[in-house]
Image (cartoon, rainbow, N blue to C red):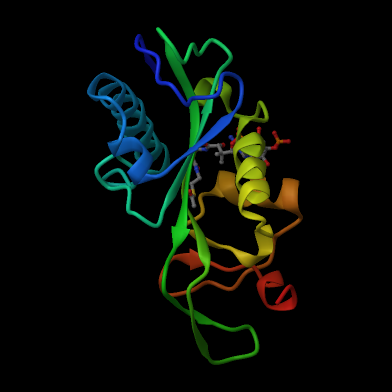
Length: 184
Ligand code: ACO
């Protein structure tokens, strides 16, 4: 996921965080460059998860969502190229969740909505870099999040890095780990 143009604000070898507002305020050339990268990552993520359409694109980024972008150290924010390795999209969602003790609860947790690392870089620590940058910046606990349709790779990732395994299946495809209730 590479664009010849550099986008100011990308972090070579690290993670930058973007909102819809920050993206639309970019100068036209930089807007086009970052949009091309985000849209390609969104399309690849959908393909990797077997989804019919991308969840992430520049146009679909809502005002209350944050998009974390991990860039390789080949990235040159001024002049280019921009080399995107992975994306993580998070934001609030109003959900009805079945509690392990029975009954439903209406809640609005922060949700992991889309998470993707390019195939050539998976299992190289980029996913952890993105996820930890998000946890730290927003002061979140992984158990107090909801996960939209987690793939088998994400389930393995959460077990390995955050020791989160048990969850009850919900009707809405979101996963809330059992620890959500004990971390309350
Ligand atoms: N098979 C099984 N587990 C995997 C795989 C795989 N092919 N790839 C990563 N993992 C899990 C494992 O626990 C792995 O540890 P291990 O190598 O010791 O088994 C761990 O993730 C590796 O951690 P990182 O290197 O930090 O993570 P990575 O850079 O691979 O990013 C991610 C994880 C984002 C899930 C990535 O594998 C990916 O993009 N997968 C394809 C898209 C996807 O499934 N995204 C999640 C969708 S669900 C949602 O967004 C809410």
